[in-house]
Image (cartoon, rainbow, N blue to C red; front, side, top):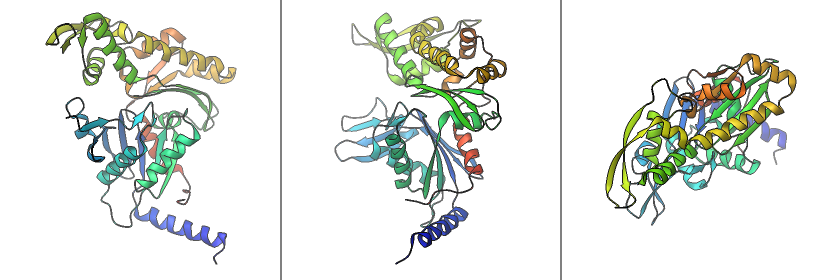
Length: 350
């Protein structure tokens, strides 16, 4: 019978063999969107984290962009679902199917090819949730799965000096979670997270339109409003757009104008939660690191970093300079790819 040392050597040998012939992947598994970086090729996939399922058979009908187009337009037996909620797996089997589809899509798979994967996860999830992500990734076809906290990945992807003995603060605001972290010497010194982010802003916009304008709109319309005219701080020139929905009184389709001031009022509460989270994290940061943050500033990453005036709002509330990452949407997935390059080795598949 082979000893454990021999078995470990065999596992390392085959792990290295697989690594030479496989393309390693970095994955940002987000509540709203999933991005995949292929080693040597760059970002090869950027699609919504949505799966269309036939509820009568459980069969997956579509994944990603195709599935998102079905949201709100499917017959009763077809359900378009987001398998992740607030940054964590809500539906394990559907998440596995989605990951498998995305991995197959970016790789020309051979029978023996199983990529090694680094995958970004929210720092506030439990160990059980972390293991669920790892297991779903391996079952989707990965040789091994290594998880990295999204704030760390975002900081690496944004080019922050995470390995230096100085405090760097990153705020990663995605679809399901907002994470704030102060990083120094390659580790997270202080971090806070809250499950309030882009999706809660969409819900707040839909609720405002329903209560104030008696108009029912869907999630996709609310997201479009946020992107087109949403702002966190007064604009030099306020904007307006025409929205369409169903009149709550007559039940008939109706169009009406909506202004950026109204959208700002609608998202005031979720924005307030995010600002308070940043203040709390600063308050809990050791004095020396807090002084570094005061002088070096805060870096914003994640899709919501693109919300107009968000940097101005946070700076006004904290008295700290705020900067937006060069490409906030890809900071996490680029960080997973760079982290992958720095790893000396991967754990053998369990």
